[in-house]
Amino acid sequence: MKSTTDFLKLKENKEPIAMVTAYDYPSACLAEKAGIDMILVGDSLGMVVLGYDSTVYVTLEDMIVHTKAVKRGAADTFIAADMPFMTYHSSFAQTLENAKQLIQIAGANAVKLEGSGEVIDHIYKLTQAGVPVVGHLGLTPQLVGVLGGFKVQGKDAEAARKLIDDAKRVQSAGAFALVLECVPEQVAAIVSEELSIPTIGIGAGAKTDGQVLVYHDLIGYGGHRVPKFVKQYTNVSLPIEEALVQYIADVKTKVFPSKEHTFSIKTEELDTLYG
Ligand code: KIV
Ligand code: NA
Image (cartoon, rainbow, N blue to C red; front, side, top):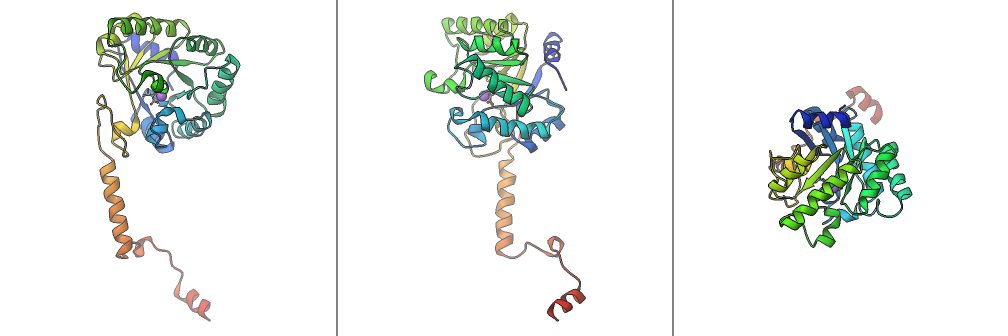
């Protein structure tokens, strides 16, 4: 399993970090088998797995259940888990307790927190307590209500300046990596150059130190809308749907189950049964 310093080394060696989300046992098994550098148990699970239209409905309990499943599927891969909506905004004690559950009970190796401002102090408290932290700036989906929608962030000079300053604060607070979501490539490039910790981009162009995509977007699984920045490497929804249609037809026409999928007892046992 990689460590936080291994991710720093990847940046130093200019080797891009490949990261993907996973939410359950099978997705984690496949991500680990494929050789992914880091798994994110993203609160995007609320949208792509649980069917909400936002991540704000995801609870700490949801994150614990899914992180545990991911851990069982990818025991040898570094796992970061999202701290969900409003679980790191009240007291430091509450933030630490919530992170403790994700690490101790669920098995995450790190937690991810969205935003800057007062969140910076929580990142500092966590890293002081020994919890590795990934920051997350740009489009921060938990703030969608405040941001007014899922839109590209840091598009004018002032917003870009704030993003760059915030990124430095996240680094100073002790984060070992920073996700940049939906920001112009030039701005992501500046942040990546100015920080010593690796940046992981999603919709942030080619100049970050790594990339992350949502599992279901990448493999084309499910009925949700896929953002413009996603490259779909396959579309598994099609063969799954075809298989389900075929299964239904087989049941209706009694093609399934055939002998090979059926158990039986010996004829003499049947005779005895009937007396
Ligand atoms: O929840 C998530 O999947 C994320 C990534 C998009 C970075 O936070
Ligand atoms: Na997230």
